[in-house]
Length: 282
Image 1 (cartoon, rainbow, N blue to C red):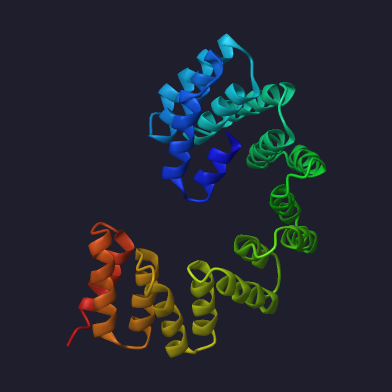
Image 2: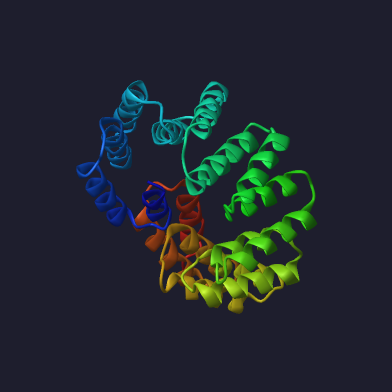
């Protein structure tokens, strides 16, 4: 089950779905089959039906997997106060059921995240620390967030450094750590991100903004162009159009505006920029 979640997190939905379907076909019990059917329904956009399968499985047998599925689906559908309380209760029930450390670590990590969203930082920290005790490495990132929310950026940076030391060549860990340090260290972390995973967009946007702030307009535009070459998304095109407008390159700005609007014709900020730039066209 955790393998399927990891495949989803790693943007491998097809592989995750194949794994779920095979698991469902070879389920050794009724409550297991219901859980797998619930995940399949959830992953195909049928959240309510997935929740019902989880509830049916819980009625059949109280298991970690069923409680975890219900908590996961419910957290994704709504996170008001009442829903958060229910998700907390479900995850606590899951943790009382027999399971392995991998699954318990995931549940503790999720529970910590809910506590953070509720502003209960002390309880969140406890969850992450307990997850780390059973070697759930990703909990370092959650604990770093708690430190940051407590206005302790140094501790947050140190926590992410521990994650980087354990998870070698982890581009996302470097990217997250860059949020907890000064500009020079941020630049170094984001250069490492690009070295490890050249297709992550955020480092290009950050470097472009820093270059623009330093009045290095051509270099800023070139940095955005590097990212747009492999991912021409709306936000990158919007930012480059604004930079082109800033340096007075009306035609280049219009090209980017039109390209962005071909992705989302109703994007309000893009429409406003296009209108403004269009009024300057010779």
